[in-house]
Image (cartoon, rainbow, N blue to C red; front, side, top):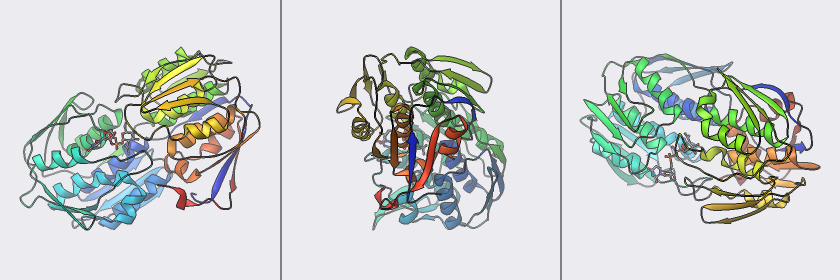
Length: 430
Ligand code: UD1
């Protein structure tokens, strides 16, 4: 699946039709880690076949679980004894593997997880994860690049106030708190739908979780957690990507298998850009404007505009009839792709966390390099709008987060093909 490839896009064909989305990458990865909390046989359904899920399977298998993944159904068998370790070659490939830290400490009283360092989106520290786990009784030391955590007497519930509603820190603490003695209270918790979904899985395992989806989450640990079956919440980023694809091609795209209420802000901004958006129970439909109107927006934690949909939205606004200002509040390096969009004719100036996008009438296709997952999707979308051929390399990033992006776009009438691209390989990432 991943590797030496490029996506070759022929622009100018409006996308029309219906496309289904799968479960959320950002929920599935954490729910896979949740399985480490108790032995037994877990089944996760609606799991996307993407590279990050395969990488998390490698992490779980290294720790001692056995996984079987078929037809979007992932079975995980977790043994009584675990090897509480995530080595650097696995963590480096996928930074989200840090989420095993909380479950391993809670279950085994120790964890050795290689320090993730930076990634495609910048420095990405994990101080909030560690501060919170320390409040619960863990200690950490860094030994030759490996974070060694200990909680010899087990973790105990604590009140942890996060300085920022970090998704990953909230999840790590929620997972750890599910096995800790007593009550853990996470104040200023992240409120993302993926956290609500993780809490639902933990509840079905026997943890007592209250307030998921609000800024104060309480979890009372239970020593008797049990394996469970859980359906992963729909991927709002995948849904949002196809919604914006409909708009940027002035097409008519219906997305099914999604929760439009998880995309309120993003759909409101699409409407402000001139798209006609209809939504119902489990579906949404976007009919694109011929030429988008300019829109200003800022990325923020949920329910604000999701940072992961910022690049596709900027691609849309690059052909707007006027100037848009976009503020990125989550990641330092999230505008790295705009240089590639500029090669296609976009007029974008970035300064620190702001981008000023002067809409141009047309983009023109050319070879571009995807620096990360969502920027990759944005470049494909820009290619669908552009005149001529756009060849997107760095496809291994796109494969981390999208199952069969090109097949789904083709099913909507888009012209896109995957080809071998000599000279570009996985070495170009991270
Ligand atoms: C998750 C998502 C990612 C999404 C992000 C924000 C996964 C696998 N990834 O990432 O797609 O873009 O939420 O919605 O679910 N921070 C610190 N210290 C910490 C933790 C975070 O400074 O200990 C900073 C980060 O560098 C970043 C910000 O807080 O600037 C938000 O990070 P966080 O919410 O933790 O995102 P992730 O969980 O890493």
